[in-house]
Amino acid sequence: MGRIVLVVLFLAVLASVLLGGLSPKPLPQVFAYQDWLYHAAAFAALVFFARVAFPRTLTFWTVLYCLLLALLIEFVHGLMPARTASVGDMFANVVGVLLGMGLALLWKRRLLLREAAGDY
Image 1 (spheres, rainbow, N blue to C red):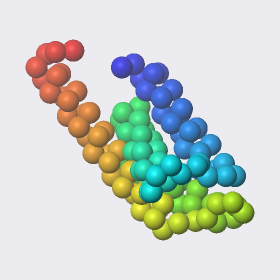
Image 2 (image 1 turned 135 degrees about the vertical axis):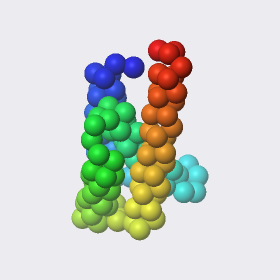
Image 3 (image 1 turned 30 degrees about the vertical axis):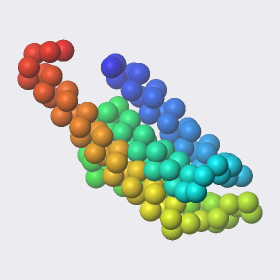
Image 4 (image 1 turned 180 degrees about the horizontal axis):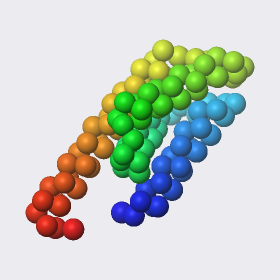
């Protein structure tokens, strides 16, 4: 996948995280813990695309920036009348960050194996 496409995908995921996280009303719940699933999936996608779009960025910085963004969003939730800050949401964000890192590592490993085999 071209780098430009990966950067655009990263920006789209970042915009989705910001729009969803900073919207004045939470998304409707259809099943229990759906909110946590949204948090984990959003931050997994954010970290994954950050790692594959910007591979030269140190992992530490990617994780730090995403965790700070998650913390900032939860802080803002506490300031909104229809939203609440939640330790559970922050836990789901951390799980998402770890999941995204794992997926990015698998992606990189797959690319390295293909490159070593000469299969581009």
